[in-house]
Image 1 (tube, rainbow, N blue to C red):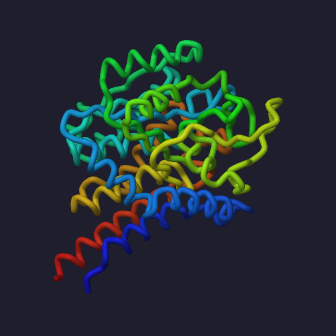
Image 2: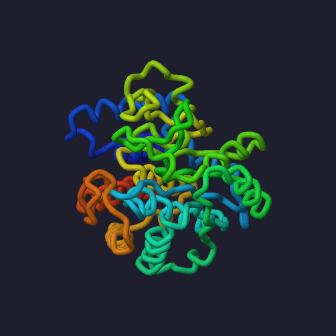
Length: 336
């Protein structure tokens, strides 16, 4: 029996909302975030992102991947949520379209990001894609962000910008972590790149899990009364943690890495190419390499094989379920 692609795409979105039900209020928060993003997209989020990427990307095109979250002293080299998603997405975009991904982040995030990319290339057994991916350091000084963004733009002329677990400022220009603490000084002003993208009509996609990440301004504008999008902060700005920087497509997942995986799974469905999505063994190698290079769990701040306090076993299970969803569609079509 043939399974409709639309059903599989709905399933992919649901898979990536796993993990929050065991935390008080978290499932409700995720549901509200997802509902607002889904209203903006008008279709499953993995489908919306895949459709826009297919319409935009081509061989040799530069794509900027923004990631890197966490502030000293708890997270001096960042957290485990973000680098894995950026690596899997970079690989998928190279294999699918022959693009040139550039991962943009501050120098302190470089070690875990590069280690994760290298681990995926070694584990997946198709490391030739790795040569197309570069790291583009962004200056930490926020007063130089506008100039740095313009220089990077002029150098590479990106056709799309995708942020994965990249924190952004609220309406008062303050960037917060999930605890509501002011971490503005520890995060470079990469949102300047999204401002340039909007002015020049370039595709922007924001991936996040709490609402304080780049891209979520699009949800705030449309659904400003949703309580989950207006978490109060714990700093003197006396506002909320919600990022007001918008994106064309907002992808919500229980873990931002999973949102990036959903995008790749959506591309695998749309293009009929199951090889785009990584394997559970790749997830293990990436997470180990990321932690060894200095990244920590974003919730516990411990150097453990966890992402947002969720176990490696659950990370692998999500990848297995996503691969199963893609395989189900392929199997149903082969039986016609």
